[in-house]
Length: 393
View 1: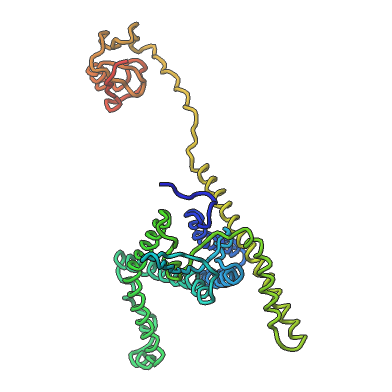
View 2: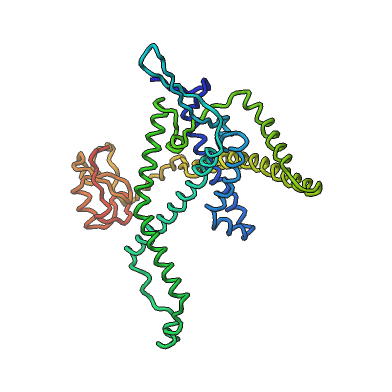
């Protein structure tokens, strides 16, 4: 079976769609890394990192809304030259024949499709991220409780300082409200922890099924969200890419014409619109550059870590010098296969670790047990330093 991997036709390849889908996660990682580095010298940025999900969702809401309004595509899809088209299935009936055939045509996105696209691109991933974080926190809390016990069974300092009557007085309606809110929050967390694994597994399985069918050219929808919206992602034609800037300028000019009020108010509103559009254009360019910069830094650090973690191959150390033979020691026989103690061919050869000379096991064991030294070098030795050799040299 052949798959389309080139740039032919109107239908994007599986790899183009996968790259467009993974771009927001890469963008989020790049922004988080950049803010984390900047927060080392600007501590106030830690507040932005504390609300990372909300900050990224607000940023993507602006980008996706602007991109869908001007190019009929998401931010990632417009970067890869893709466009969203509404699917219109027209039934063509032939009177001469009793069968009917369906023909699929594409048209521009309607307003409700753009709004729902923003919801699928921004709102649903935001709730998914929040549910994932709640599930992870609850799972860590359960694991900690199973290992160390429940940490809630402790006494407060106020219980020791105040008496029984003061504790009764301190129980006000606000405390009761806070306790009810805490109980409700815990119940919601338990429901999320019970339902999230099944929802996540179902979503991932359904997405995998759609991607596999898209790869096999069995469907034109890459994800269940696109199928629910009735949208196909198509390649933008050369004329559409060339007309994008003119389309953006027409939209902006029409918005300026809608301004009402005195001339000075129109001038102020027009200046604000121009500043907003300029900021959006620079934001898109900056975010694209941030993604590429993050990928480059990721490759750089990964290659550096691989170089640092790679084992360094050193040359083998030189062999130690041969041991010196003592004048009072036993002389070595001319034949290396003979034992210096019994002057016979070695039986059960064994080496003495302190000197490296080889003897018969019975001979060297008896000699070392009696004299506590090597018979050739006279170095101190014990029977624990005798090593058996399974191959005589």
